[in-house]
Amino acid sequence: MKKLGTLLLAVFITQLMSAQNVGIGTSTPLEKVDVDGSLRLTGNSRLIKFETGTANLGTTRYIPGIGFIRADGTQLGKIEYVDTLSFASFMRMRMGNDFSNGITLNTSNNAGIGTAEPLARLHVRGTTGIDELAISSGNLDEESTIQFYSGGIGAVAAVKKIFIQLNENDLRLGTNSNNDNGKFIIRNNGNDRMFVDSAGNVTIGTTYKVASGYKLSVNGKIMSEEVRVQMDADWPDYVFEKDYKLMPMDELENYISTNKHLPGIAPAAEVKANGIDLGNTNKQLLEKIEELTLYMLALKKEIDQLKTTINLINTKSH
Image 1: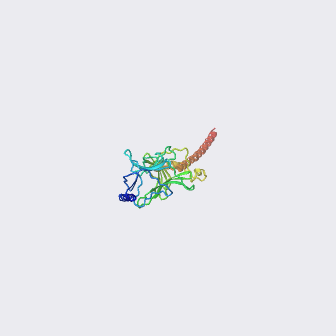
Image 2: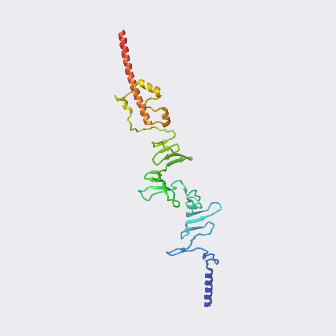
Image 3: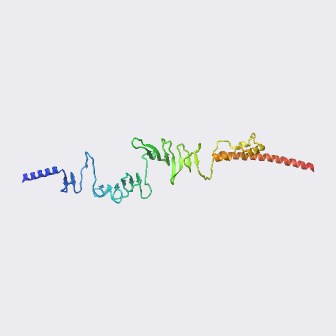
């Protein structure tokens, strides 16, 4: 009897080796090892090791996935691939049974956090609209920065172009130092509205066109409660100095008749072509007001002298 048992065992082992498939819980194994049921690994070196070739770990179910559970059966999380006829397939990693807080990767390689349908390379959706995306620095002395690059494809090295940065209590938004031709542009309704170039020149209300020699160019009206112009030039108090040469009134009359504008004041054609210098124009106007004051004072003296002469004539006639 013992010899018979040994013979049967040898036959079984021979068939098992020739079949190459081992079944545990199944009499029809379809793979090298086919387990119908759960597989438990214990000990300090729990490991499933793939030595060579391409390793695949997963299921062939309708929604294949790998779950992570505690010893009591509580589900901690899951990595799964979802493929249905109602919407595009995607891969999802989630915690517990809550689908809303998972991380999704779709077939377009768009990643979604909090959404199963990411619309961009990274799509973050929260539930309250607060702290949906947080960026922080691990060092108190460093700034938190979002950096935008160009290039980085094939042999083309990635180059820093634009950044958004928290600088202590300030928000810094602009172009990098190696992007000397780049401009900071504010755009709405499909149109560029404001430009700041690498030299710090600002253009508002028009296509990018900086007036030569000016830091701010505005195509439109400006409303302000106060405008202060800081000038280095002399203010026209010099008009009241004793050595100031006041144009004789006859010459002034001839000049106005010929040129159709006051001396020292820009003509209409020049203003139309180049605009006016607010500070210098106010200086010129004040100069003319002070000259007019001197003319009036001179006329008053002449009038007073005439009055005196008339009074003397009247006195003698009586």
